[in-house]
Length: 495
Image 1 (spheres, rainbow, N blue to C red):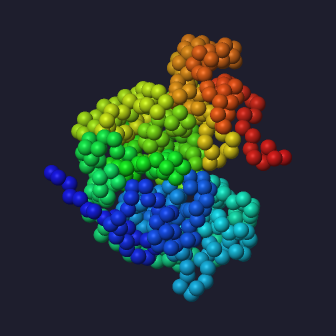
Image 2 (image 1 turned 60 degrees about the horizontal axis):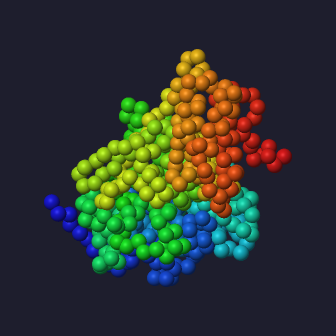
Image 3 (image 1 turned 135 degrees about the horizontal axis):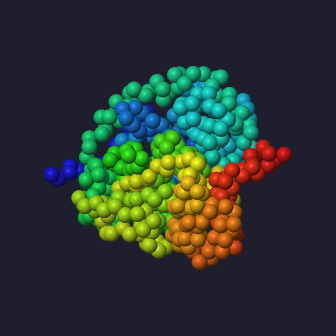
């Protein structure tokens, strides 16, 4: 049966319903807000999702409720916003002309100097305040990972965040009062149709469902498939690349599911980092710790686990972590599906085992049965601890025999080769050997047979090789009951 098509985007901007009949595939929310709507409170800083000055909230219906998340407007394309509620800083204005509690706290605790970054901080804290009216310091710092300030200093902003709840109740907030009305209006917009805008190559498509996506991609095998746009957004803002025709898949419901069955976690390709965070942390804690260091909160709200796999980056954080667990990948073309080992998906730099018209549907992750004989760890090395691109990432899975010899070991790295890659020769050097320091030191000599890393702005080849070896040493110390400290807290490091 042919899918019906709608030739317009429908969404809510602050309090107004919007119908957009003309939008290019590469039109960003930031440009539309500032140039077409004259809403200048949303700022452009980095144009790559790093500084947070452009933060807005996007509300969408989830499981019958309404969820608001902070996103980077500079790399969010308009084609991904059908059926959403976009909230900018202008919407925080109170009926009596006063400041919103988040804004008032920023004033009272001197959280702003030049003020350029302030709207982004306010929107990030607004999103936090709605979900956690009395957040912990950890929650505050996590919410602000994606916001940079070069003149105020973060302590006044953190003090502001601590004080927000003393200014009023969440129930008095505009979005809280509007919630039921907004949910009803968004539900009325959800007609289940495919959306198509533009003509010839300058067009984009929002599929109605997963079967429609399969149909569209078979007909348009060279189209740019976009989920969270945390990478593709930079193709436009930094590289000026043409992304048309584009297919926006971020809201395809069937790709946003996640389940655990028979100790296998199946993750739909469009599950975002933050959507997967709690579930994965509960089953595989090491993955939760890793996700907390991927980008900032805005990136984790938009970026998808499947997208991190599909783009094939050699420094993508999730692939090596999942490869070490023996994960598999389901790809779909039309009505046909095939499942392969995740490690086999990456062929060479910029080349993956994905046929024309085929897309990543789900990744399947075995849950490790952790204990004295089974261990798993992921360690990311970057110049900044938070919101930074990886220089080297090591993931380690180990099963021991009862006598302490190595039964199974999988070691995967990012940033060490043209693709995420297992250390096959190192693994072979460890299999059947006692899990002891002498075996580790002997295996270190095999690293040069597995890897010949490059030097770039993030790290030299010499540094990467040394770090990769030291991460294996660290994993051994963590799993052998060593009494020496392995991790130093920020407080101890500063003492």
